[in-house]
Length: 384
Image (cartoon, rainbow, N blue to C red; front, side):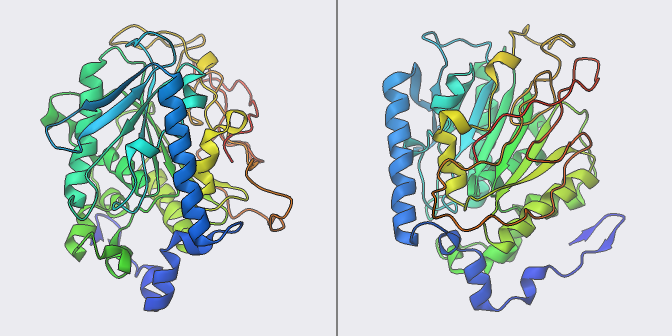
């Protein structure tokens, strides 16, 4: 695939790997640092199940809400109060599992800490392989976003968060054709956690056995390649994209995240990149269950907006969530609450790059008031 105005695309580094090396790079459980692979996967399922049961027992919710006619096209909505209010920021979470495992019924990681700060959380189900195809999954996520916008037209912003395969599906929403759905979602930000954005390497691994991706399928569903070739640019700075990766993710996961961030910046998207210290592919999402280490300190920086218009200035401006611009913008800390005294010694973080306004250190973003003036930073130790 050639990128308009940039000539032929350089050969991807993954093509220089042997089949064994490629398989190893795209098997996240082989890179865990504190537990064995089997124990890690069991713990991941256990914590997701525990978080979901707690959320359903303690939060006002609407469960198994259909956003389409398919069997798996349902979502769960968790509200911050006793009333299912409409004028709220909504965070849509897309689970990981290599598009072939995982469930919304075990993925309510973010509910407890986010609803405590006034944000509604939506956990979206999609039809995983082998029954579902990548094209169908992208379409399902697109329709789930459309559904939420139509159901809650007075929302104070839709924020998409995805982990691993879910980060890929969230990233595909940057390229969605909303016109054909008759609605423009009030998208305010994307939080992409340890994702894969170029699917071509997956075709050549055993992960593709249930997916049955062809090279063309992979290219058609690769946001990295599609954004490189995109002729359109974002219409405004309101939508921020935060790309994160765990320190102990594999080198290929690091490369994918860095290159996707760089592509976003070349395309004039408002994007930031952060490596999260001392976590692996699974710990990075586990820690979203921690009240004192969540990546989202949102409630106090949001105030009710009017349907159809968002006030500028004062506390409102652009919303502060997931490191996005706004009064009281939150920061990304790099402490890992799951780390133990036996953790490997800390190493220097990889090259950290961010949008203009990054102050370095362990934080992301700057406080910006409604007029766009710098208002300083506030360090909040977040999920890692």
